[in-house]
Amino acid sequence: MMKQLVLAAALFGIFSTAALADDRYATRPPVVLSPDLTAPWINQLGGGTVRPVVYQRPVIQPQRGLFQRRVIRQMPQPAPQTVSAINPGIPAIRHPIEPQFLPQMVDYDTTEKPGTIVIDTNNRFLYLVMAGGKARRYGVGVGKPGFEWAGVHKITRKTEWPDWTPPAEMISREAAKGHYLPARMDGGAENPLGARAMYLGSTLYRIHGTNAPWSIGSAVSSGCIRLRNEDVVDLYDRVSVGTRVIVM
Image (cartoon, rainbow, N blue to C red; front, side):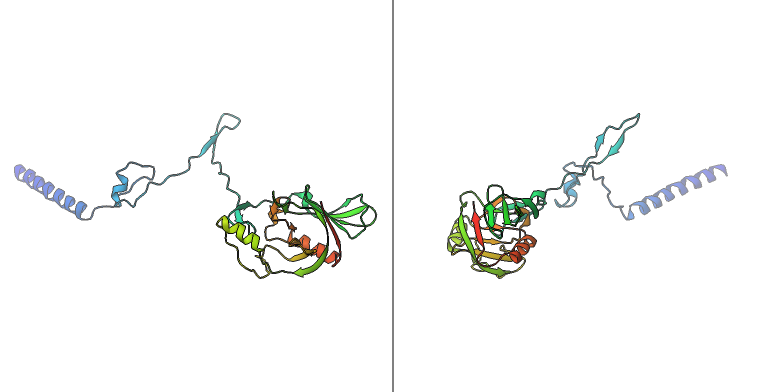
């Protein structure tokens, strides 16, 4: 009797093991991989489309005391960039305008009459002469190297949201660099002349706004004097056709 029981138990174990084996391998479980594995054979699992995941390692910074705390230092983000409409293809880094280039009343000793505009291209300032030894000062962008100029003119025309027609010389110059300018651009927020323009004499130079306010305080233009849009609107309302403009 005992032998029969032992034999029955052995047979039951064999059949149950086979059943479990069949059940275990009827449907294979998915293969789960740690993202830290970077062995070349991992790429073979997906036919060459699988790529190891790379995680940024935390930076351990020592702390005062007996213990250290793990700190993940965020990597600095690059400054957003844009492309200058006057100089397409050349990235201009956006940055806040420096405080000295914001409009402000300053002491200004000059023999010029109130209402005269004096532009100091070296220091990137435009002065609107006021009475009592004062002037209203604005930050400006001026001509880049090779495009500097000086002279005395009068404002001959004023325009709100001016159209932009690049001079033939500028179109040719930029085309030689692989930059192709439009033959004409309607006035608007994307127009490089900005919200207002004041034309100087019979020249191609203007005092105008800009769609790149971060360029104020720099030598970036082809000779024109540019202000922030809010500043050129303020100046535009304070001067008239015939205003004397001194560029030095």
